[in-house]
Image (cartoon, rainbow, N blue to C red; front, side, top):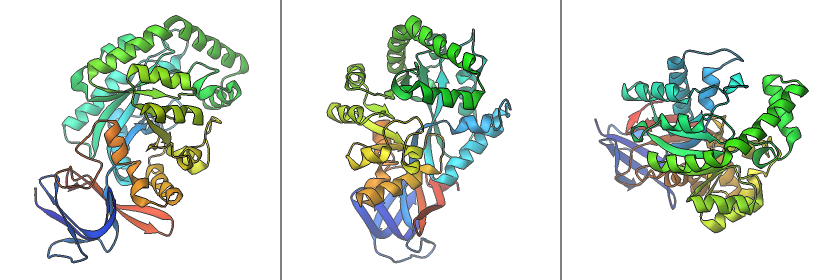
Length: 379
């Protein structure tokens, strides 16, 4: 692999910014040098920011490519490739593709098993070198389901499962404490009648009563077997967080209240919030606003959730709130890398992976101008 020099750049380092250049060799950052000089054969970045590539821990974006319209099942190979290209163009260099495990087969045809075959397709394309960025798996373990244990058993340590998250979507608690918010979401997405919705709620509550405790215990055990980070989801109360801590959880996805976020901080659990929440000014489910947690010093990591382009925008929004560009960008680089146990990326430092992005600021709009993965330009 030839050496690459990115010169006359504003480097976003862990401690702040530096005008300088990077030398990339053998897929790694070989050298950091100060100054605006542009050596022969170097890429002149003209003062643009060079930051670590972003790391996405939880995104449903692939689902949008697989089902671009309701009831349209797009061929998975092209969908995965398009999803991958979109993330690369947004400056994301490592992604944990979120796949639901745990299905409802008797009553709800929209929750059929799909994770194992789709994971195999992602991993096959990765092995063939068809993907631009680094893809790992995030299994969303649905407690309110019938088949969670069997679906988790289909995965093994070789499947690159990096995260297993505990999902409990029982109506009336966590994300959907307000059942009216759930009604609006479900009826809008699936066209349910009021009776359909009432049946749906009753079914989920019955599943939680029947399987909840066993499924929660199985997900904790399976995360350990797979060597994956275990995450909580939608913690709402200090009691929820205490349970998470007892499981050994160190990553909380989208806590719904400031109480839960503060309890996470006290327990040493990293708090992740959604970029759409931050950019829109609040949660679509009526839960705590990400900006409020940021201003309270209770936000560590940002996930794009369902809008990949929102990740970079949110990092710059946090930089404005905190008055610290390096801190804002760390929520989408160093902090998610640390939470996922990826010690070889997420920062600009000698010896780390050369996963990098070039950013130009057009007024308040950050624009990705180039993306490198392992020292190779991919977008």
